[in-house]
Amino acid sequence: MSIPPPPGPPQPQGPYQQGPYGYPYPQQPWGQGQGPYGPYGQPAPVNGVAIASLVLGILCCVPGVGLVLGLVALAQIKRKGERGRGMAVTGSALSAFGLTLWVLVLATGGLNDMWDGVKDTARDNGSAYTLAKGECFDTPSGSLEGFAYDVDQVTCAGEHDGEVFAALRIPGYGDSAAYPGDDKVTDIADTRCYALRYDYAMDQWAVPDYVDIYYLTPTRDSWRLGDREITCVFGNTDETASLTGSLRNDAANLDADQRAYLMAVNLGNRAMDGQPVDSPDDDLAANRKWADRMATALTQEARQLRGHRWPAGADKPVGKVAAELGTIRQEWERAAAAEDADAFYVSYDRILTLSTPDHSLTAREALGLATTPPSDGDTDGGGGDGEGDSGLEV
Image 1 (tube, rainbow, N blue to C red):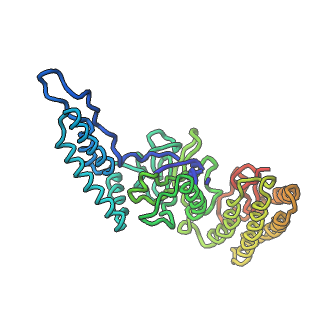
Image 2: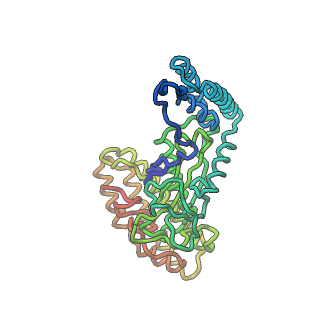
Image 3: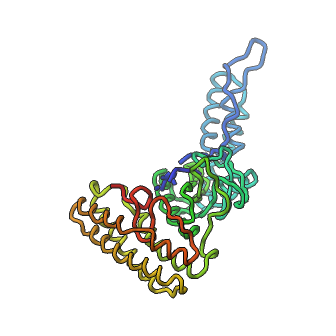
């Protein structure tokens, strides 16, 4: 599996890609032969290629290579008079058998079973292959930048380097599907992990600013073994701070009113995540489509806020948030109809001015939710400050 910094598929991978999983493929422990003949009176040396063929045949990790090396070794032994013919023949035979098994596995969809076996072995050695949703872990270096599969699972109650918030299978790719490439895998991971964070940590105001999103993705080699899994991780980006306690605040940890409020405001947050990579100057059409999606999301958000029966202390504050959303939505609609980039920027500047945390803070306080706005300026009202993930760089 692999890991990038965030965006993307990607990486992930986008935080998001390293290639730490060389573990199923052991490095060659053998050396090369030192010449065709030893000193006078001593037996001829063993052909190194024959040894390599035998080792690969026994391990059955790359049978195609083992078979080729066996044939090469037989030719060299005949030409140079070296020993090792039996090794070369055995290595070729084992490799041919292994290659046949690989073909059968591909034909019968048995790669998942093979990958499960790899994960079972990894689980016994503390591996990122085995991380599950809700688990926390430490890395040897203390950082998630480029961390390998070697991890130590720890309790989330204490200090830790990362917390898994989602684990999923890449959709649309069966056992026999070809590896789609690093960029594609990273794009998928980036899109899915950023979307799934709202299911695990519904209140994004409760996630510290020094926490970012990372993901582990299949590599080309692990894909051949049946790996189709993406692991999404919250990780610490500040070496002077530490993650202590779980970041989980999902539907099971919230009351009905908190869930209703967060499900509504996260409609706008999810739409905000669709901000185009290019600015309106470079791609006005993409930004206009984004603005249209924002207007639609805020319409749905306001409707949900108005449609819920709130407790007495939260009714008026939530109503003010809904009213603010209506005003901001109109500016998103103007941005969606902007004739040029300048007009788009005018509407967006108004959105930033209208998006204040005051009403959100009051509503959140009444509902018992986090009251410290993120540094990206998210106000539960569909705006940002232009610096974070939810802002538009102008």
